[in-house]
Image (tube, rainbow, N blue to C red; front, side, top):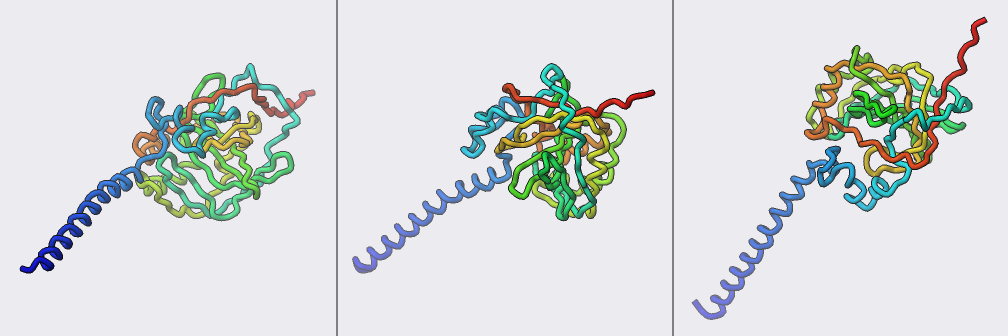
Length: 281
């Protein structure tokens, strides 16, 4: 074997070794990325490194979660609430629309594909886009936390947001959820799974109660965007223990309790609308 051939062999061997080193260095990185892909970016467990008290520091665009002064949820304390009859009845024109159900890992969501109607606030139409559940409730009333909260999320054409919150306690079955139970079973433990559910009527979720709280707040999950108009219906509805457990078991492990802790009110106004009592002659 001549010196040139020997040198060529050494060069090939060195190149192969370098390639092997690059490959071995890349594999753990790729594996690590794959593992983190399926981990939740945020947690509801107070004390976790990505728990609610740290959301604002996980990503720059989530800074509002810590720095914001108008965060949600809050405690709807009657000492702070003022009666504002001029708010008027909730004016919405919901209609049945095609929808799908999605397991987002941290919650179960019904996403409307068609036009499900709108809610009008101060002359502006907010279109119903989706609804999802939290358990226990995120909003509390005089410090009391109920068992479940449904959020109906609306947006304007300029992407301004208004949310209606409906509170539930354990009791009789919720007929709206009952109709969705087979679909929830199908997406249980399957993160990012989306299933068509046909036509869903949001009027069945909203109910007919007319007394509500109103305040300015934020989204209750990162990025905790502020400027959200919150309407929390005062009448507490019922959900069965079985239905609540179905929702909790369907989500990602560790997300069974997916309620953000109450945030500081910081001198915000909290209003309540109550119709005038009928006079009896």
